[in-house]
Amino acid sequence: EAGVAQSPRYKIIEKRQSVAFWCNPISGHATLYWYQQILGQGPKLLIQFQNNGVVDDSQLPKDRFSAERLKGVDSTLKIQPAKLEDSAVYLCASSSYHLQGERANVLTFGAGSRLTVL
Amino acid sequence: GQNIDQPTEMTATEGAIVQINCTYQTSGFNGLFWYQQHAGEAPTFLSYNVLDGLEEKGRFSSFLSRSKGYSYLLLKELQMKDSASYLCALRRDDKIIFGKGTRLHILP
Image (cartoon, rainbow over all chains, first blue to last red; front, side):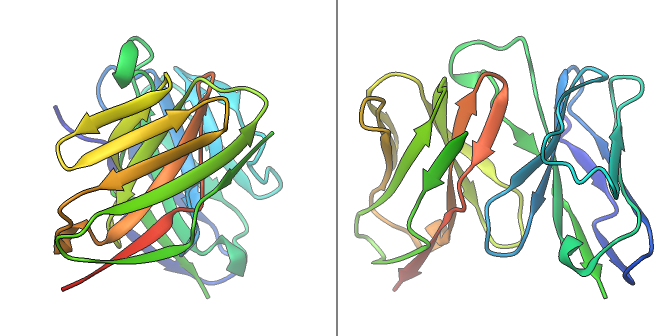
């Protein structure tokens, strides 16, 4: 099966500019996650979708970050305007709601989008 | 909320055994994951514990004690390719919350 696709892999912008990241999950995976991973830290959940509905966005800085998954398949994460502290890797992951047992909620991650804000 | 603690860094020797601990405090808990993350790469799934006890998968084993809020990942016969970060993550309903990870350095 094809993995989780993300683009772009790398992006360098200046502060106050905007950026958008795209994610295409594994086919059939209903749950999609965006995580932010700052260098040397674990991934921090930004937003979680179940199909095209938001399950959790409590840690999404909504004054500058937005995300959508309009058709319940691919998703975009936007930052506008960017700040220096947004420099991080943005990881998209997906999981199948219907698997049971050990595989339940096992996340498959994309390669990530590395953002540098200057 | 949830609080997950892991050592920041550990060092071990090729061929040896290492145990990476994870302690947690959470108001709800469905299971605990371990992920491996090589530098510059995405995390990959290692194990998932729901019940107390030890789950063995080849060179890697994972242990869980729900009553103590404690888990460990045991790596045997260490190889240089095991140099990576190891992430402990809690499952609470459909949410997966990660700890900060433990960077494991393997010496020849």
